[in-house]
Length: 499
Ligand SMILES: Nc1nc2c(ncn2[C@@H]2O[C@H](COP(=O)(O)OP(=O)(O)OP(=O)(O)O)[C@@H](O)[C@H]2O)c(=O)[nH]1
Image 1 (tube, rainbow, N blue to C red):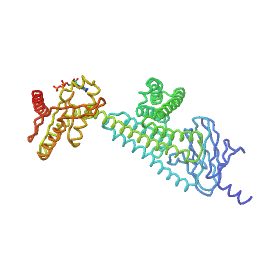
Image 2: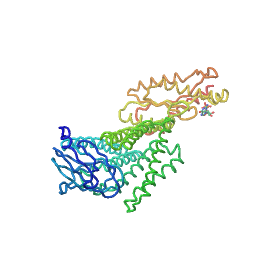
Image 3: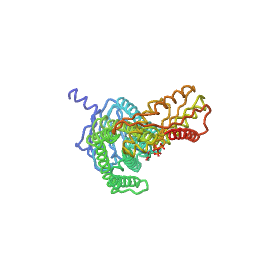
Image 4: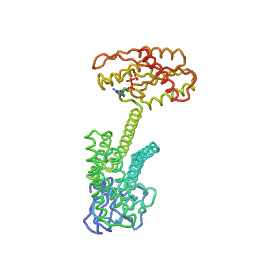
């Protein structure tokens, strides 16, 4: 026998499905052996030679129960995320009893102990990092959205937490804390978490992209109803109802919902919907990881496990980003709506409501800081005549031009408003009385006789003005308006009497 053959014999197990048969398969240390198994209970006989301690393990989830005897002694399970047994150095014979949930392939790994412990620790660190990241994002988004009524904050957290828990259970990480075969390995828990993940994921995406507003019928009957059915079916085993039929329906419905969801996200992307790009990239990352996992179930650890984990964390991050983008967009819309609510659309100055709010602020400012308040109230003279003679559109141009002139004369801190019709009002707060008077004179001079260029030619417009200078803060905006309106009216009467 050559040296090579001796070395080979010292590090491998011969595995047979019945004792004494010559029909054996070789499990070489540090390599994977895939065996075809039928469902139900079966016994494997192992005849092993090795010069170092090893760990015998498999990652298939089809094994419901296992029991190993080495040299007729029971071997206890190692506490690890996967089912694993410590094997001794030297020559030993072993019997491995396996109960398979269904027929299929089983991947055996037999790894030297030092290598196994190293990879286990690396694995645990890696998983903790990504699971920690996902859960932190879920909590963070929930805290940010706590006081906001938008549903997608809650839905995001529920989705990410369900998906992370599903991953933890599926990969067997709870086996590190609880003895194997306990509740954490139950099919009920696995199905319930799968159902919840599909449910919250679908509802989150629908809510974030407002898909129901775009395709109300399809989203309602084609996605929301099926997703409720999936959730219901996934919870059936928890109520003690276990059957293969509902599980199959759930699998097919889940596939249909995922495809439907993906199609709508793609359509939303094509419509250039806000945040659709981020959601699309996130879903593509998950899709690629899942395809890899399904296509290469026995590939190396990175592809089998980490690809899904990294995609999950990447997806959680992108969806959190999409959620914050959505909030930014909503805030912008709100600000715009608030601005619109206080702005005069024709003249782009404050409307009565906006001006009243600004005036209240200026009165408060004077109460706190002292100084004077100037109020300048104008009403165009015979504006009706302009409308009648040149038309409403030219009238509008005149009003816009008057508003422009007023805005140009004042600082940003002064409130310029159109109270309605051809009435405008300016209010400013000044630390010195002189500053207020100077503005008044400037406005009065500018508004005395205005030449306005319109599309009907140059028009001469005049205005009556009322001015009030308050050294003591007025009681209310109404008082200010009443008094300055009165002054303006007197001015107008004087003009009319003189003509
Ligand atoms: N073009 C235009 N006209 C408006 C608008 N709002 C009100 N008006 C007109 O403004 C005119 C205001 O008429 P009055 O309040 O009688 O004022 P006036 O013609 O300037 O007369 P006196 O104030 O007495 O000098 C009315 O004919 C309204 O129809 C608007 O947004 N655009």
